[in-house]
Length: 271
Ligand SMILES: O=C(O)[C@@H](O)C(=O)CO
Ligand SMILES: [Mg+2]
Image (cartoon, rainbow, N blue to C red; front, top):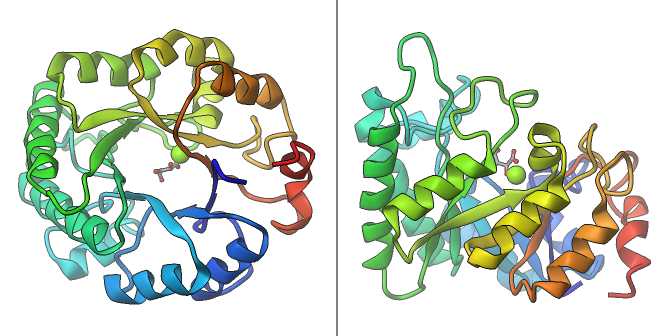
């Protein structure tokens, strides 16, 4: 299980959040990820990690909000990040600084910087997005205690209509243009399969760049276990080995029954 991380926002969803750490450890996971740590004080989460013997491998920037109350309400208000939204400068900077504080407290080396959903009032702007990512990468670079890499994830428009960043090509072009060592790509094979239709080909296209520094997986369509649906999950895992991918694979799916019962696809790998 050494390369697989349990996404505690998706897995063990029938348990209270605090109980999901121990549940993941019992199933053999060594790493966990979840998008939003901001509902809990960082030291409480650090304690859960330590007690369960787990590493935090990924968090997201807040969905929005320019203060603590705004951050807590943002997801329910339909916000999905601020990086490309011209009118959200203050929220973007607040969110990056807050995420970096949490990353330090949780010794978490990766932060997914959410781009945002275009609206009639704020359609999003590429130059703004690139400029802000460069600013955030400099902030991450100056955070010296635990090095942090900021990640760009393309998200499909069936699950998140209007999401600014929805193709691997968009993410890759931005990374090449900015060219900052603290910026990299998060490839979610589920979104990739839904948008581009061939996650394996996309992986093979971008793997040589070594810019893919986090992966997530779910079956497509449906977003259940990887072995439910058309995702070529076995070929993908072999391809990760062939490319000597050194990072984590986050299990970001809705189990069909219980999380533990749905881990058969992973157990059959003898990991
Ligand atoms: O794929 C997803 O939905 C997540 O990885 C995410 O960060 C946005 O919620
Ligand atoms: Mg994802």
